[in-house]
Image 1 (tube, rainbow, N blue to C red):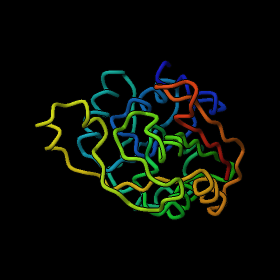
Image 2 (image 1 turned 180 degrees about the vertical axis):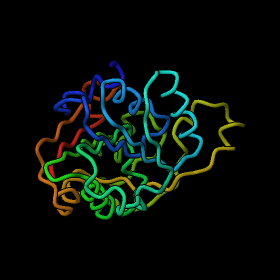
Image 3 (image 1 turned 120 degrees about the horizontal axis):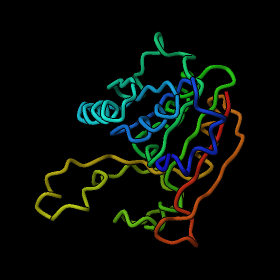
Length: 212
């Protein structure tokens, strides 16, 4: 599946595995995983995203589950230890202002021996607009929470762009991400850095592979 071409190397297989797709948005990755045989549950805060994702799944002839909720409020009575794989990508960590709580929640969702695949924007983007997000540079060690546009707002004309609500973001450095995962109990198996799509000489993304 083309949409999983950068991430499939981190999966041991797909058939029959239970995957929690964290902040899975419109379901593009979830539907691809389901088409490969995975049992996928998306957790995302947007009802609109759910509507799109369920329609996409139906059009693709696959089934996915979609829980609309704050990821930090996932029902652990229902989902504790339920998943073989936690999968997130596309840049979500900056939406969570307490990374320790986020990683603890991810740890709680996994079965013993399960893995977390966390692919996100590289912390270099804190100090340089490597991915052309039009966000101001700040100290690499900054812990500030700042206001920024929603994803894709920059692709609209100025008048429509003004109508989009703002997001409160907290960008992390590498040690904060790795230490939060370790602090939650994860064993780090791999940390890969990937070239930016805007400049292959600079890192733009990373993938953290960790095991419970």
